[in-house]
Amino acid sequence: MISVMKRVVLTAVAVLPLTAIAEAPAKEALCRSCHGKAGAAPIMPAYPKLAGQNKAYLVSAIKAYRDGERKTGMAAVMAASAMGLTDADIEALADYYSSQ
Image (cartoon, rainbow, N blue to C red; front, side, top):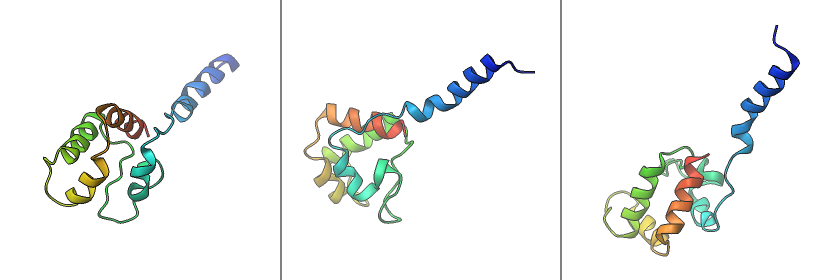
């Protein structure tokens, strides 16, 4: 039989990921317009979900769009959206979306 204290600890550990979700960075509103709230509900099927993506992939992809290194798919739209992002902005966005 699990003691009350163990149940409390187990419950706290189970809930921790829900309360540890990062606060959205200031530039997240730009992404939200196409990728949806918290990057989890894109407005079109062709737009990927950002929520839960690998951080390193997000950093690489956003920088590639910003720097004009990606040319396929929605590259023109993404390049226009990413052109004003600094490396720090990109890191913050990648941290946020990878933690969702």
